[in-house]
Image (cartoon, rainbow, N blue to C red; front, side, top):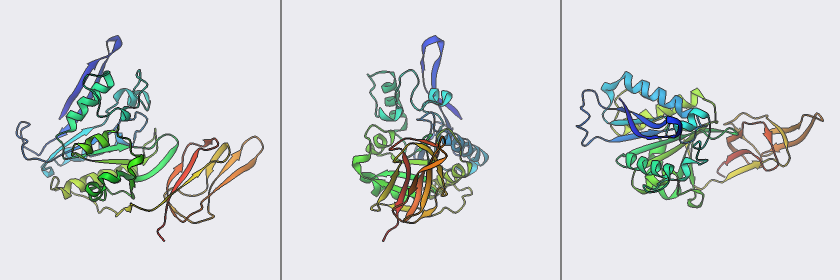
Length: 315
């Protein structure tokens, strides 16, 4: 059931419209929702992150295929920043603004602050929310959930249900209070931030795993009785160090190691090449043993560019 969440006029006769697809148990009337758990699946805050578009498609398809298996409310929001998705811009066009830096918004503020405040009201009655992201144009990420350490006690058990490889618990100092997830967690809506894949692309196998993970969470919460494939148990990192590899020179980066693989000290992750002189300018080497969970996707690098992140193996 497609519903309009909010709409407002734009210049030149256009309108900004944010919509959701609401799924209810078969035969239930829309006015008789008391006592049902509610999950919101959110995507498209950043317009250049497209993995969530496929996830929303596949989740909507499966829920529509088996409405008799649903015992709760699932609201799917493919594009919170529809103009950004339409134009492949990370932020909100016209406003030059990162939408995930203005929550919880301000009902009396500028247009985007008002939109953020209305969205917080929209999500505030949910039990759970899943905020789907897809890294950016430059980096590829394995399927992971990122959790603020202050919320970890409440969230990790749900993050482990999502069929991801890695649950990364961030220190409080690295979490921005202006994000959707922080704002929702602060008002009691259990919100998980998913990162998977790469910007401006769709990684189908990652997306299908995350759809299976969402259905698994629904099943564990008694909201879904339909089919769910077994999910893998993720690495949960509360105290393990993350090693960063940054470029020490500029050039063209070509990886020599498979993303999501295990690496060892001294292993070459990739090389930075000089196309003019036909030389290798730098070999990017791991100093640690662990999981290569982030790898450079965009080849052009400058000094300081992030090449890789490795979750160090416990000793």
